[in-house]
Structures are given as structure tokens and as C-alpha cells.
Image (cartoon, rainbow, N blue to C red; front, side, top):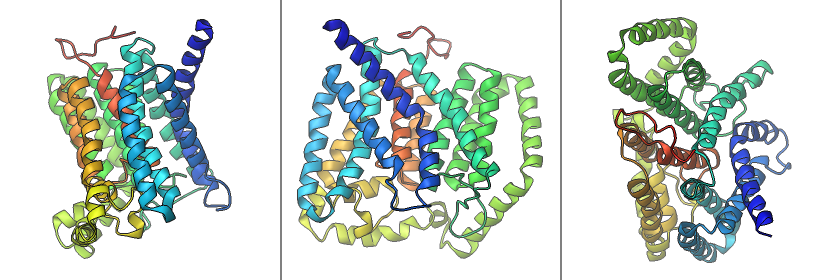
Length: 398
């Protein structure tokens, strides 16, 4: 009996990881099929409900005590919001499922690593596979003639078959952050190739947030690693020059679009950097404070469209779940990082970058692709531990 239970646990762990690994392919298929026939059930929603169910079973089967505290709290709050929004129950449940899935990814799998039921190598394998699959998911639709413009206000930018621009922008940002950190730890040729391919995808996408992540982490990598190794510095300069020549047209298009946005569609530099999101904050706060129940419990997670969507996650989260929910959710993320993750150079930088993206770019905390990517990022921060030489501890729980 014990052998059967152990086999079930191992099977659930593997199924959960496999499902997360397949996210690029599932979302590509969903992006291709959903616009063609809106009557078709969204593959992405079915997929994420399956991931959610597997994570719940994993938490129960492995008796993960942290989940026993976190899950009832979040589910209770979801029920309260459903009662307060009886006409929009499904929208609330879907949004909460995505939020809880993100949290369960790092709480559940980090606990399994601590219990030595899971090797950290399998987490690296997951991120390595993402770094391969996302460029493929961008290139294949291009070869098939699926040329979807990423920006609504211009003809520049390409997002493959992915449905949501902001979400895929954050996912690619997470992959690039991971690859740069891995390059610092292990200067392998495969990570250089994968980094170039994923930066190529970001150039095709052309969003400000992902381009800034490449710039920010690239400068950090140069400051931290490259200046100490002149051969790498020279190679990097040559690579940048070649990249500029290859992607000259795309880069010029992006620059022209950004200049147009700053000149004609933005009231200030900050307004430009937030893509006009700050204009909606004042009206949002007026609507939020007009009802005492909104202040305490929010107007319903995922219901911004019925009120006003700021598209800045921390503010949207506050409006959606109220002060009580906001404090609880932020406490979960904060306690996990500050009590269970090592506060080293790259971890702090990745947390700061993700927080800035949540604050100003949005579409992360309770969204499908980006929410799962955030969970995986926090899981990576948990395993990214350094020794005295500032290199990864190779034998940590392996």
C-alpha cells in the first residue's frame, strides 16, 4: 500500500512538471485555435484547470503543511468574493485559480525539494526546455505565415501565435533573466545560443518592458562578469554589432514606434513608460473608495473590466481583493522570498525586476502564462543558492 502511495506521489510530481514544461506549446495551440472559432473551448483554460488540480493533489498527497495554511485562506477569500459577485462567479473563480496556481507552484515544489522528493536538476531542465520551446513557438508560426502584430497602435511587433502580448512579454523576460543568471554560474555555449534566440524573440515582440529587462540584466551581467574577462567583452561587442546588422530593420521599427508613442501619445516620460496607465489611477481610486465593501474585500478579482482596469498589478490587485486580500497575498510572496530564498545578487535583482514589471507593466499576478512564469521564477529563486565563490551549489538536494 505504501509502495502504491509512493508511486502515486512520484507520478503526480512528474505529471505536474510535465504540464508546466508544455506551457509554450499549449499556449501556442490555444492562440492558433481560439481566434478561428470562438465556440471552441479555450485549450489554455482547460490546461490551467488541470495544472491547478494536479498541484492541489500534490499538496494533499505530500502533506505539505504550508499549503494547509495558505490554501484555505485563499479559497475562503475566493468564496467571499463569489458571494459578493453572484453575477460574475465564473470570472472570479478563473482569476483566483490562476493566482492560486502561481502560488502553489513555488510553495509546493519548493517543499518537495526540501523533503528531497524532487531534484533541483528537474527545475533547471524545465527552464532549459522553456528557453528552447519559446523561440520555436515564435519561429514556426512565422514560417507558417501566421504573422500577428503585437501592438494595436502600429504595424510593428510580432507575437507568434500567442494571444496576450503582455503575458508573453513577461514570460520571455523570465527566461532571459534565468539564462543570464545561468551564464554567470556556468558559461556554457548552449546558454549563449539560447539567450541570443530568446532576445531575438523579444526584439520581434518589441515591448518596452521586455526590452528594458534585456538592457537592465545585460548591463548587470557586463558589470558583474564581462569586465573581468576581456575575451568575453570583445566577443560580446562583436555579437552586439552582428545582431544590430541582422535585426537593423526590426530595431528601427521599434525605435520609430517608441518615438511616435512618446511624441504623440504620451503626456510625460512617466506616462510613456507606463503606456498611459497612470491616467486611470485617479478614477480607479474614486470607484474603489465609493463602497466600504470594496475597500475591505475588493470589487472582485478579474472583474476590472466591469469597473476600471489600471493594468498595474499591485493597484489592480488592491482594487480586486481589497485591503485584507492585498495584505494576505503580498504577505505570502514576501514571507516565501525573505524566509526561504537566499538574498544574493541575482535573486535580489530578479525580485526587483519582477516587482517593477508587476507594478508598471501588469498582466502578471493573476494571469495564465505570466502567473505560472512568476511561480516558476520564485521557485528558481528558491534553488538559486550560492557558495563562497558565488557559484551555484551543485550538489544541493541532488
